[in-house]
Image (cartoon, rainbow, N blue to C red):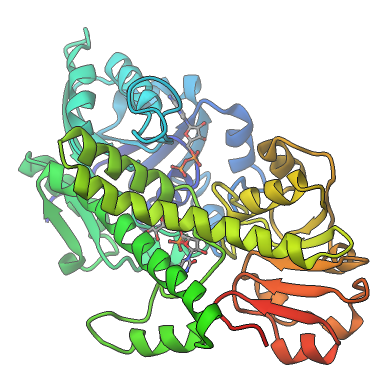
Length: 448
Ligand code: UDX
Ligand code: ADP
């Protein structure tokens, strides 16, 4: 077994970098792990009792490793750690480009390139640079070019080690991954990274591939998952017209062992920082490489998702006779405080634009941060309990599948007379809603 690296650095203390490094530090107590971020507020939060990322089990892991072999430090205070590091992970955002060539589709690599320049300037000796962020295929070429321009005589190997964790289950996914993927051509560097993960991941789950395959595999895995959600969501609309029930169809389809039961839950549309961005990045790559038919195939997964969100918003607006709407759930899924690309953003925007008043409740999302992302505040109020949101509402839109929304006591909710519950996740207690005398529409279910 190859020796473990002694010192590693991660640039980017976000949803991926923070939890991933916390787990590595906890599982490899002899490895010194330093996480850098240019956002001093975020670093202060990682060093506080109130972490910037909400993930079940994360606080306990950070609590065990922080101050022992895990440090969170502001970028400029981490230069010495970077100079001494054997391995540097790049774990920064790769959002969709908003301007220039590929705007609206291609991944914006400016944050990654800034990291590469920073590493080129401050690394010493030989350093393994690891792409942890999701990159378009052949991004490593660009990183290599930037690193090669350094004037310090330092040398580098670039590996791709995309992260497959899902938010809300990040710690479980990191501790018991389906697989760890390491792509690269330098056998010694690959072995070093393998040794790190082998501290807790069975060796048969550590897959190695070429660099370009690793980069593309991450995009492909997310595209396949998103495609399953769009497939089931497309059928949810057909169920509503035909009397079929999407939950029953999903259950039947999912029992085919070739298909499997996961990612077949109809919803108001997928959100999160990855699916849309990665699909668009794939579409751009296909167009760029002269494959318009392939690009159109994956584009349709995105388009169906946009349609699902907009048809849901229209249904809620139509249901609310008094134009006052309770929104339950702002996060893009349960057990996270993340609302990037959440269906709630589009649904709430559309409701506000059509003149509705929205009272929203989410157990983890910070209302002020949500408003600033929303870009419109008139008519929107974030409240701190579901009961407050429901008071006087003419319609209720259930957007996130938080457990507490499954057990709401509808009989006690002070909804407006004639109110309708529109369930975008298929989770509410249907009998309880009907017993309380409320109207009910459920995504993928025919009207009762
Ligand atoms: C995803 C991938 O799962 C993960 O492997 C990758 O590393 C990052 O992108 P994440 O975005 O955190 O993870 O969440 P995920 O659980 O995949 O859900 C994405 C969206 O799809 C959510 O909005 C979720 O509610 C929705 N979804 C998921 C459905 O609507 N139906 C399903 O059956 C599953
Ligand atoms: P992800 O979901 O991929 O983890 P996040 O947006 O949650 O993405 O986190 C990315 C983090 O990377 C942010 O905290 C941001 O401040 C940090 N970051 C971006 N660019 C740089 C950079 N050049 N140097 C240091 N940190 C950076």
